[in-house]
Image (cartoon, rainbow, N blue to C red):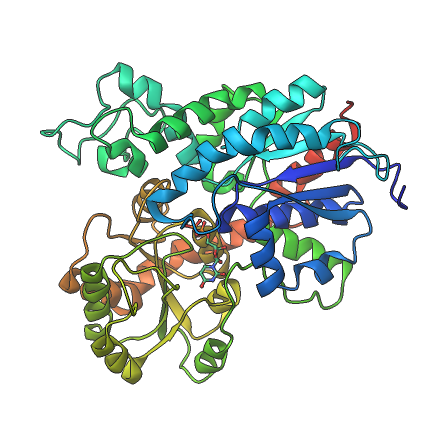
Length: 479
Ligand code: UDP
């Protein structure tokens, strides 16, 4: 057995997509820093990409108790695993991966072979509740980690109530701007339009809708729920969730929590990336040449698929705003065949824009030249923007993003919500508002929230304390 043979051994198992893997790796590193042994279970495909584009293996080699293991996600290698096809992973992972996962944990399996102490607790992605069945069967305590905001989790949790009240499924003549009373605590601002995108399906048989609803309802069966958020940001949603799932750990923003703990241990923590695409660092040199707060950063995360028309409207809006922009256009992120970017857009970009296929986003947002973020409102991107004090224009694509953008625009006042609109005139106006006209009024809440986020991960902060409690609970949880 290795040098940490007596320390508790945690198995971390993320759902295999960028946003989930990346923040669960951060959690893994936080647990390693506290001396726990950690095994991180990746899908084969994700692991190959991490090896190809990051230094994750050498980075984690400084933690003697850390190991990677891999498992199949059950899909053929050429499956796109993005856009609305992500839902296929839910089915394959439950059918194909679940029995393999169980096998790994049994005596003689790769996670129980006698070389390392057996797994004493599991932290699994909260949208893979089949892991609870396996853990309970084998008598291993299990905590679930959900990568969405607390508010979104709570909206998902209330779906059965919305079905009962007749609010769902949405009917053709429904007013999308009607407020919902079924999501307690959010009645004053949550409209039908702001529900997670899966709720827009015309009937209740939509696969993504069913999966997310069922998985959320199952959460209570785990020993606890971990959320990447902080009390000052989502106090009310957290309070609602605690009424149903009392053992709740809000430990975010995770990237800031990790940074704070690494800085406490190392004088200059190394740069770290968990990207599944190659980061193009030339954009940092381009940013160095731009004036302070002059650039709008544009990125729609790892799964958004833009139509050609949406790409064109967003691009005209940006160019007509006369602001400089740094735009991430991920490979295969524009619908249709062939070249992603129409040549006329590429030419026009030369003047005031810079495009990359993937950027070191956390560093970009922290760069002094970046003054705004046109985002799809993915939860990681939202938290990264909050910590960097960058105001947002939100153009949510799907899943939880509809809820997040409403909070950003209406509740926290950290930017503008451009939900369901993709029109060059609106884009131009909203960018000018963000960067010039309404900037001063935006920056007050933006700076205030940045300070609260940073305070939450500092010593004595709530997220710092909740992480310590999680670590203690893992250490004392018995098989
Ligand atoms: N990201 C990045 N470079 C890019 C675009 C995105 O590093 O060019 C990272 C970003 O920092 C975030 C993650 O990818 O941590 C995207 O997660 P999010 O929850 O925002 O959206 P998703 O990809 O899950 O839709």
